[in-house]
Image 1: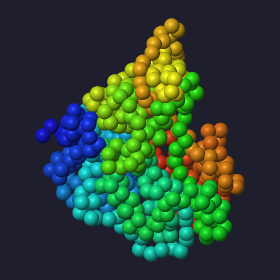
Image 2: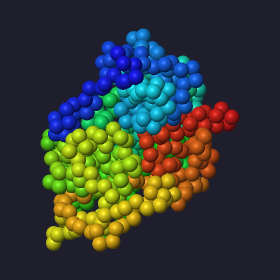
Image 3: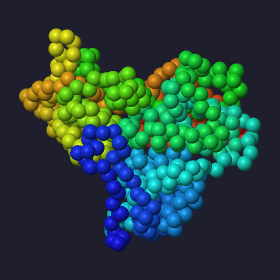
Image 4: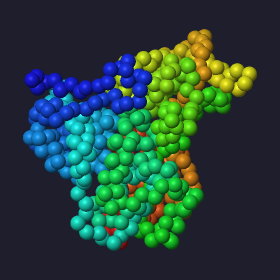
Length: 461
């Protein structure tokens, strides 16, 4: 075995998978996982841990995998992470733990994410659960939102002995894990539902169909329902648009709506009475992970799909793996291009887009080179569906119905990064509701920090 190279991970063939919604990556088996774990150097000063937002003991769990002690590996991970099967699939490990792996200096870094996924899947298949708190402490905490931030905060608090209730606006728990990430990247019934059940096994209660700010307010939870602290992990589900002519036409979706209709409402299944128009030719505007998810979903629904992005491939914010998979599946990338108008037919339906070509100028505030329009380069492209994937912002419902809760100009809740504390006493926040749209693992890190902040607050109180 060449220790400088990773044990390859089996995947569905690109041609086959582009026509189904089964999971693309098939993961490691026991033999493959142990062989990959043997590549780990077991560093005492583990740089990989410094790259992990939830500080998993990475050398510790990989060392157990190496010896075939999979249950012990799971318990090590579950001390730090409530969602290992999710993180092993969707975390950007290449820029976090694996990006700091010492083995990667002279060879390929250890496949930490795939090993985490293997351990979590093995535990699920063998009905292994995370360890519960030995006793309760009598304090009640409310968590708003059952996405990665909320589930992490709730799970950590439950392990400390708190009586935790999650309030979820939708009819299923999981937040963006359920409505935002496609089945072929993150299976819902097999993986997400099992992770939610693991959190519930710690004693966490989940109430669905509760819209905070409508059904009940945060002030009412604290003043009438007896919750001593509240964590807001409601995410950022309000889509952004370009503001160009034609954007109001039929056949124009936000990526949020397109993915929610497919992932949560199962529009891709003929047996479900929740269809969505996909069209024969689809334009997806944007270059992030959500854009890749929308494009790859539309491809599976039978469309010719174009991703239109105003910068070059080097500036694509999506994970390299997601871009690679999209290309393999036949998604077409129209880079250094941007729509300036959507074309609309007499019936009010989108029929295409007017595109202008771009070139990269000087760096902007993000450090990336600013795209500049090339005069006279406009052309038209046909499309019967256009999906806007330009990011999201928090829904202002919670902030507008909570006394004394400060927000910034982007409608994001202002919270202390170290402990999640907000301007309102006893109320904490984290994840996309604070930062705007970001990654699952960063939301989990914020949920973990807030759980520690709530524990300190209630202990001192």
